[in-house]
Amino acid sequence: MTTIRLVIFGRQGAGKGTQCAHLVEQYGVAHISTGDMLRAAATAGTELGLQAKEIMDAGGLVSDEIMIGIVIERLAQDDASTAGFVLDGFPRTVAQAEALVEGLGDDGLDAAIELDVPLDEVRSRMMSRGRDDDTPEAIQKRLDLYDAQTQPVIDWFDANGSLVRVDGFGGEAEVWARLSAAVDAAVAAQSAS
Ligand code: AMP
Image: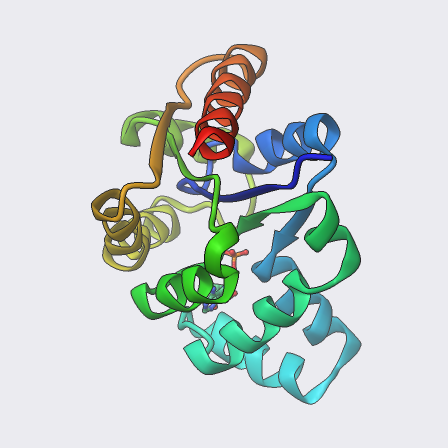
């Protein structure tokens, strides 16, 4: 069985959640969302969860040390180590990216995918969701944070050779066709190397 190891990046409103569900269905990978893990810990009221909640509410980042520990432990679980994974929300910093690549060792990643959607399009998608926290100011703040925090990590993968940019503009099926073709190509390239 092929083990598929992916990281996915995309702005809020880029359709990352929807496309991750397709990845899980098609490849049987574990969807590992660090945001979901932290929110679950907050709901459960663990010490880590309560600390993380404060940081999340303030718009900050949980420390690299904690995040790397959580993710490396999660990747060692049976589902992720057998079928593989798609990491969503991690790495958020270059230090996390380096720790991930080091932790995976020779197996490495098949691809770091950037689901690329034009800014105007993600803005209008977020506005049309009508969520309470989707005010123009809040949307702009999240977009700015992505540029400040996530873009350098994408650039790091680009410089290290494993970035695959997928055009995320279009309907769900159209984007999925592009994404699955990109994953198949990355997996084929990885097993040939
Ligand atoms: P997300 O759902 O991915 O937007 O994550 C929600 C919040 O969880 C973020 O705003 C951060 O506060 C925290 N978080 C999630 N993933 C990470 C990470 N890899 N490093 C640091 N903080 C994170």
